[in-house]
Length: 438
Image 1 (cartoon, rainbow, N blue to C red):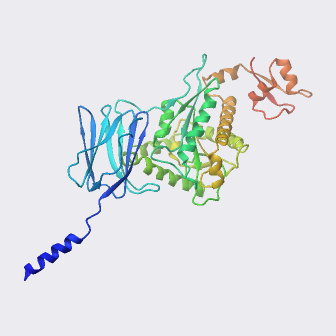
Image 2 (cartoon, rainbow, N blue to C red; image 1 turned 60 degrees about the vertical axis):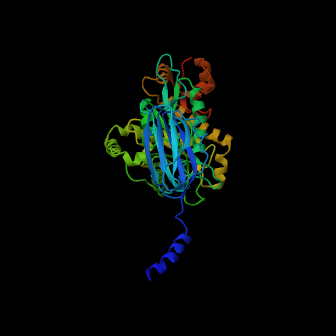
């Protein structure tokens, strides 16, 4: 009697659909100066294993229950660590084997990430050059002959696997911020007595906590982080400037920014979030360090000047500096500001941020504010501090004008205006003016 049912059962099992294989939808590579991130996009959570081989160095990844799909041979040409990515003979017909041919020995971290919009399931391979330390990229290495340059660290927000906010038309924040950062760097590197370093110069990821550390390694006098704002609705618009808050964020938007910064870490730096256990202790100590006072004061004063210049070229979302606990601002010994150049979630401002001329205007306004601030309060030991010490002062008396003083001291009116951060030609009786040296 039992044998009577065996054939029907076999027929039924044969007619059932097989378990669907996972699918590799795409492969992306993000090379940076000292590391490379490789990302496999998959339809389902990946089942995988991996191992390393030597002579030559290579990393082998086996995807279980996965269909072979994308052509991957041409993806590694810009990486300093990866020679080639290729397929190899799999362990069985239901798997895919990918081999990463390496140019040198590296430290490799492999981990899976769940779907996080705009991405689906991912397998991430982080390759780190164990012989190199991450460094910011110096754009202008010339030094002043008598005293040191004022060093400005420029941080283009997001990058690589982390696109930042995405506009209604698909504009990535990471591309906008890098463009503005490069334009700002071009202005700074042309200014005698100033030097610029950039946390990134290409499309690669750096964790928020690593960015102030890069500024510290380069002994920066200021860290300026460039971003484009976003919100859950398209209505908010305008630029704003943020400084570190010692307490919780003081606005709804600040809380939103703190939340999205964590989201960016998960998009682009899950490895750092998973393994970084000492960082919280460091930040807690930094918050308690009294040396933060000078940094916070300088950051606030400078942010007011940046706001004053930004309002000449764009609408402001907030007319006073805002505060939030953002990781990129947490350096206790370096004044730091975060400039939100507009809302990429607002269709009109997304269009403006895609306009090269507007990006230049934003960069120019930030530069003018930075220059004006450090001209009036240059750090000790810099060329500008030396020049300011050599300058004379004059108390304005009745009947005197800028043109009269320029003739008397044999300087140009523009030089007096620049030395005193004057926007007009009017001076008042009793005002003390700095007269620049010839």
